[in-house]
Length: 253
Image (cartoon, rainbow, N blue to C red):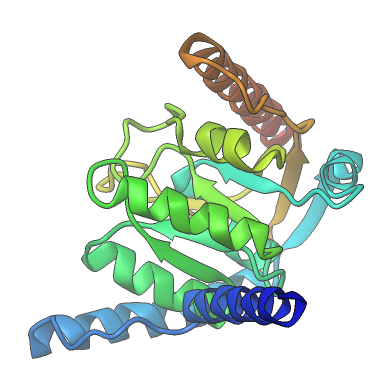
């Protein structure tokens, strides 16, 4: 009986390790037409090279690192949350920490998953509209296997700067804290054509990283409490965004 129980535990551990390994591996693109596969690979490599070259010149200033430390104590691991238009610098700043990111089941989601994996991230496919439940279940499993996670919390298609519920639900299911952060480059290019107005820092600029205090969600939280936590997350992200805007203004003064 003991041997059987031990064998089952080992099997469960192996399955968990296998699921974690898949998150860090490129997805099979064979279901896409050749032209789309080619475009995904071109976009993947283009963003990887741009982030590597440009973000490598950025000088980071950090506020609130003690909040990261608080979210990482006593066996806790963070659920990172940030705005979609900060992906460029966030990818570089938090690289090689094996953070698993929720990406959409779409052309954009595929090339984003691939270039972040080149920086040591994992990727789980899903979105607010497609595969959301399955993706959340997979992220719960990965967190139980010790993987930090991250949400571009207004993605994949907005509205911009409006926090969605995914990170709150994950915090309830796992007991791990939500860790809101933002990164604000002093000098940047902004894409006016994209829904999120994607930010790309100019080479050799300074950037402020602001990390807010962790947010915990009770395992028995009801719908009203969950909505309250989403509002708390929204408020935290709005506050650190304003801090970033003030700092950027100071750099230009």
